[in-house]
Structures are given as structure tokens and as C-alpha cells.
Image (cartoon, rainbow, N blue to C red; front, side, top):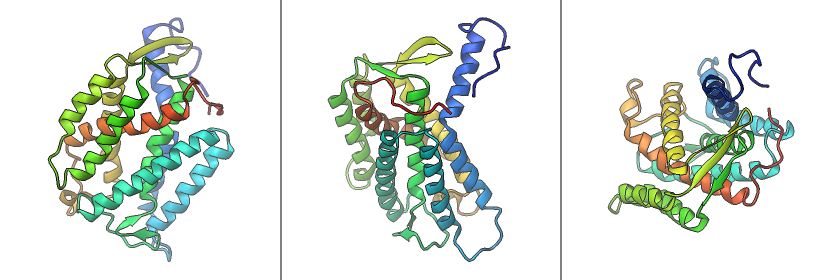
Length: 268
């Protein structure tokens, strides 16, 4: 699928490039859009003998199989997404146990207060990064894999340890900016090659993940303590948290696609 060729101007015109970029990003978000749509639709279901969270686990598995069998995600993509799922579940187990947020509904496929479907929320982020890598023919220029991976690992660890030790996310943000200062992301929109700083891509993705988190909590994906008696917007500090956390997913994808700009996958 592509944008209509009747759009005004040559392929390189700013309007066509902007619309092409937006359409490409929408396609990259296909798994996330389908997952959140399923979460929203599940709130409209009548009372069933199966818990809503358990149904969402089945739905997430079916979505994964659909994307894989259709060739929209390769074996390598599925491996990256599976790692994101596991990392996300570990994150959820700690955060839910500390009361940072909750999944208040009962379920059979639920451990220590965390339903297994919670991992699919992180898998959706992994799916976005993998699909964007293919659709935009991404290339990292002057990327420092070891240094960036070490900082990303420290960022991930800090989201656990700050509950007991000093929170060092701002020093880590500065360190992440430093190790990626000369790293550019090159990408293609409608045949035209562009580039942006990798650090800027973290900020932009973090912003849209924050918007998605607002939507996800609105449709009942999970609940923060201040949303117990009715939905409220997610605090803007989560924007910064996502801008840092996305570095973990990008490091995983970069390792999986090392030496190749894209991986074999159908361009849905």
C-alpha cells in the first residue's frame, strides 16, 4: 500500500515527503494500532467466562502469528520482538510489585499482578522499530554499538534501582546524548534519502510513545494510582522516560540488523 500518486508536486516536494513519512510511520505502527484497537474493543465485550486479560493474550499471539505468516515480520524481527516482550514483562513485574501502576482485573494468565498480555505492549514497540527499519531502509552512521548498549543497559537498570538508590536518569540522559552525538539515522521517504540525529529520533519516538500511553490507559490497558477513580492524563515526565527507554529497543534492533540496512520482510 502507498500514498496516491496524484499528490501535488514532485516526489521530493516537502508536502509529499511529509505525507509519505507520516504514512510510512503509520504502517510501522500497524501492530501497535491493532493491539490497542483490540484492547479498546475488549472493554465493550459482554461478561464472558474468560477474563479480558486472558483474551488479550490470545489476541496478541494471533497478531504475532499473522504478522509473521504474512511476511510483514521476519524471523529476525520476531526474535527482537520476543526479547522486547521478555524485557517488558520483567519491567512490569518490578513496577507493579512496587505499586507504580496496576492491572486491577482478574485473570488466569497473570503472575504477581502482571497479566502476560502486558509484554505485548513492549512487543508493539519492538515491532514498530523493526518495521520502521525495513520500510524506511534505516542505516545508522557513526554508531557506537558498545558504548550505546552500555548506556542503554544502565538506563534500563536505573528504572529499577531508583526505587532504592539515587535516580540518575538525567546524568544517563546526558551520557546517552554524548555517546550518540555523532550518530545519524539515514532513512528513505519516497525514494529520497534523509537523515536525523539518533538522539533526536529518541526524543520524537518518546513523545509519540507518551501519547500512545495516554491512549492505552484511557482504553484500560493498565492503570496508574491517580487513575483509580477515573482517567487522567499521563504525567509529562513519562515522555522523558520513554525517550530514554526506546534506546534499549533500538540497541537490540541495531544488533540484530548489524551490517545490513534492512532485513527481508514483506512491505505491508
